[in-house]
Length: 316
Image (cartoon, rainbow, N blue to C red; front, top):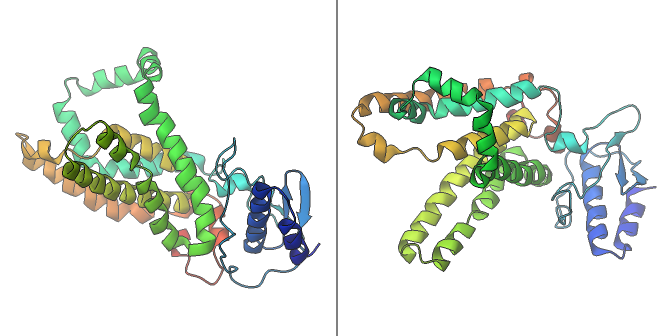
């Protein structure tokens, strides 16, 4: 069946949600060469060759509707190759794969800890226990039982990192990259992530927790650093091809919070602390590309969604 015939069938689907899914699958079929697409068990084969470059991104190509399996999983696509070519699967596009998973779990987290070198040193200096006691607590099963029973801990360290990275990285980036390219997707995706945190402003205004001006300044500040963090995790997601790295980095940053620079200024050993702050930032930028080198992580499925002749320096 030709792609134009499939497109006509899409327009005749009565259910609006299925019609949007069908049209989205058509867009994906134009991005992945000679792909066989399966929508809810019904196979649709795209036989015509795809021209060099990504197709034009029209307004219908990125419309999805939420489902019980998540924003992007509504596209129940099995990307099966024809002529012996195996394209990336949906799970791989969403960063769920086993190849290189150990490196994807460890290296981005270590890189993020390097950035927080100063705050970590500050935390160690102010911590009442020594290192051995801290390791004993960390290895104590009762400690983890208490954490898992704490709903606030579960929200901040597990639920929020997993769901936010799933939606804003694993689901949104594969839909943005064909339209914007890799670099622009890294910049665009965090804007949605930052806006999604504006509900805190509504809560503060509703319960009158501060002045309007103070709440506005707080909202701008929160939007700024969440957008920067979102760009960083989007970069990690594309460079590694894995979802686990952004999730662990998100959980770690939620635990650390924004660096307590004010407390560092008043610290009796502030010169030492600020030396490690500066050292951490310098090492972070020096190690950013080496520690996220795609050679460690296997197949970067999302890089297949960009046009072949465009600049793919993020993927190399």
